[in-house]
Length: 110
Image 1 (cartoon, rainbow, N blue to C red):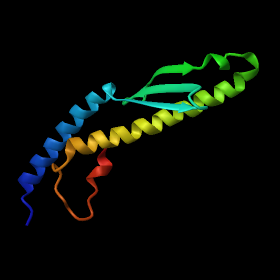
Image 2: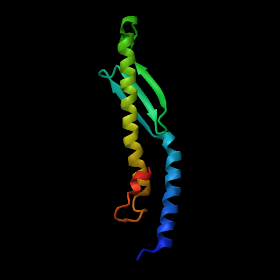
Image 3: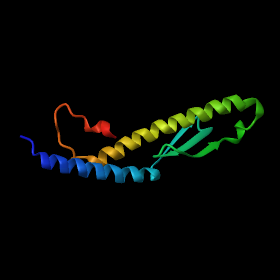
Image 4: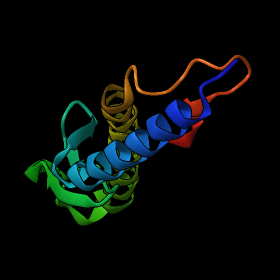
């Protein structure tokens, strides 16, 4: 039989750890780049764009549409990369804390 008090304490412990880790996500960063590095975007763990770098060869009116597409592509890549880092950090923060109950996926709480 499950020790319900122990499980509840583990859940509370995990919730506190998740909250602390979420507060730390602002310091986590990921970069996405496209066009052989012509456009780079840096985002943080709160999914906010921190910086965009554009190669000077792209600053030309005729390349405006291409530059727009590259910025969108780099931003999306950076956001994909930060999602991976967020999952890794949240998993590490709660490793071994949650009970292993068949059919319960506590990883989806993140």
